[in-house]
Length: 497
Image (cartoon, rainbow, N blue to C red; front, side, top):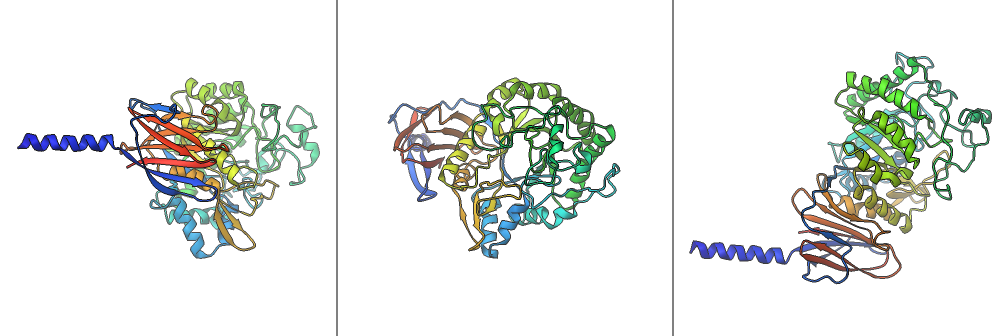
């Protein structure tokens, strides 16, 4: 009798495995997150885009996150209490839609602050007597508290855009002069060995850069290379961590600079390779180790595709850091970086911000970025602005995208295509999932696809059709096949039941 029951149980289990089903979510420009069921098949409907044998170990994905900026707070405050709470719940709550658990911060102003500000404006204050976060308490910290209401376990990392102006050779917050700042044009000679003819389009997000960014590298550090300044700046990082901890905002990782290779009209700071080495190895690393050994030091953020330059810097600092922050053009070198530095973690430190269109095309690009960064080795992914007004224009002339667009006239909001692109990933791929296989849109003629295994053993398949025609997609999972006809311009997630 016992043997008969055991045989029946084995038969039932076998039937269950052979009839594996998935919950299938679909988003198009017309309808988002439509739910149906899908089953594995014994035969392939087309040549598999991916083959997953079940033996892949894959790399672990750790966290989804976003950045906290003043203009995001301003957008949220235009909405009703009900609408604001809905957004925050959807993005941060464990039972929401995006499940973000990480945040990125800036020390001093960034390009999505309302205006320039610094935590210490007193020139020569090397002892940091006047260093404070009072400005942040009224603004960015207010936004963080809104998010912590729904996700109390939020953790954070920080990078500055610019040191205080008095710590820089140009004594100002930008790198180059512009109609959006007050820096005298004659100071532009500081960037390139006395050459003043800086291309005003150098920092354009779109257009032809001749496949090299930046086209010319800064020839000197804008951070003053005096030991008093360098040590005081390292101390600022630690003081910032301590003051934020007093606000119950835990910072567990820092990077020395956002985009040291963007020579900007908004807050920024150019660094040379040698300046980067000296500050990180001789000042920031030992100061953190002494005062905050629990805080990790990552190197970045890297936004240049000059691989030899990146390699020179990382080779010198690989023993002092735990990982690299990769964004924009440096994504081109993810494979080479992962191969050369297997012990370093790679994160996508900032998703590309677009041009303020907030349309379906922007959503498809973000979907591609999510696939590409994570599929090629990044274990954390950070969205830049999660909410902005209108066309997302900053005080320095940028127009950027966001997950949620607020109409300042009607004081209403909408979830953009980028929001739904992110939801197709973070909605079902939980921290601790492993990336089993990936094929880019270029490898699959416009059908990017990536496969994860969650900690509970359930598989998640994510794909998109970014072409103008319906396309048959097949993914082989073991000896079975997931077959699906994908409508044109559509996002898809299949989560094993």
